[in-house]
Image (cartoon, rainbow, N blue to C red; front, side):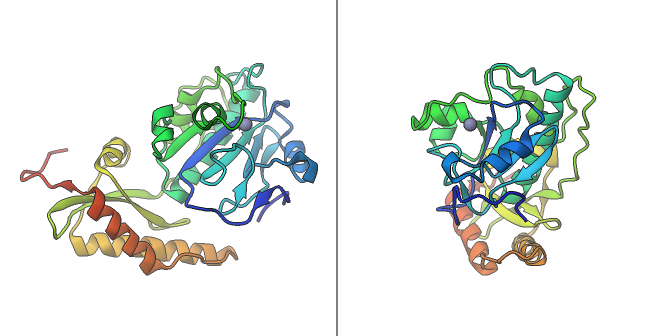
Length: 285
Ligand SMILES: [Zn+2]
């Protein structure tokens, strides 16, 4: 499963990942494998979940475990090192754009897997516990436990977000931007206590589901559309999504560490807390 296992990690996590943290390795764009191997050295005292370069995409730490990459956001971040230099790499050059495009595909998969929205958080949102995508520089600013500023001020965040969310790529590069289909749906129901409840559900691939707030639903709506369903169907889909997740994890030889009924209960509790009052009249799309 993991290409280059490292001792520089903690087994498990304190909580569910909520952040994708973007880094640069401060090495040339074709050195992802070398960087991944270097993380195996105990003296490095650092690691990442993924290392992306023009020479390939490598894993060092499983996403359910804690990598050591961005103090302050190690426990709830999935760390992606991108081969390149924060202040020297032209991320729009052929090589740089290839790294960004690969990272975007990876980000799309990670976000689907963990129910993380494909959106770049502001520092305030990061500090307030929102889920999304951030840079190591932001982690340094918000948590003040490191001084790293990667992946640098010229990093093309807008291109990454467009590619990761499946919007037309703004990059002029010829690098491949083909994205695997993200089988994710936005569903909405009216609860028995008369609020709207939204969930992102993924019934194939790695499966999984997450209850989301109105504001996040508004964010996904233009991309995914929304499927209004009855209360029983909504619950059935959430349960099926978690069953799909458990089956997928089992199929790849991983331990199934989630109880489907616990996850469903958690989602019900969440929507009771965050439900927006259902308007009396349906909005037309
Ligand atoms: Zn970093």
